[in-house]
Image 1 (tube, rainbow, N blue to C red):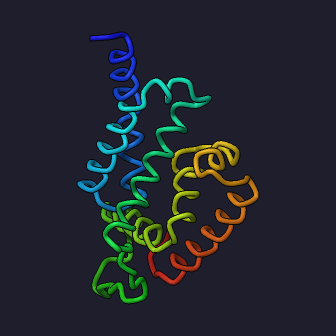
Image 2 (image 1 turned 180 degrees about the vertical axis):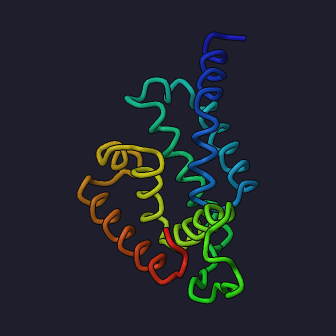
Length: 171
């Protein structure tokens, strides 16, 4: 086992959970997210020396992951199913005070709205707000300008606000 193999293993140990979370938020399916992360990490391993030389190995791998997500949907001619956010039924017999399921319902609503966004907008929201990256880091990963990140983020937040505000669930 070489030092490069050990470094790769340590990189995977430290970054696997955030990569899985990002993949899930990009595709909406834990099993698919596992597959996409494995594909991204396999490509990372094949090009590990190049990844290590990058200014930000983490950004390099995230870009590979986003490319894998996009490639999956293009190969399958699959677009995440459009979600009908207007037909969520609410039982009027439910108590007025939310129970523990309220948090789950809000999280489900947010994920549903997030998956309804176009790929680029979803990627900017995931990277900026759920992964805590700066505009510059997001632009670097997505291979675009900071202005594009700003405009895509603005459009995405407007769309999310519109989708979520149509709901009766208090956020």
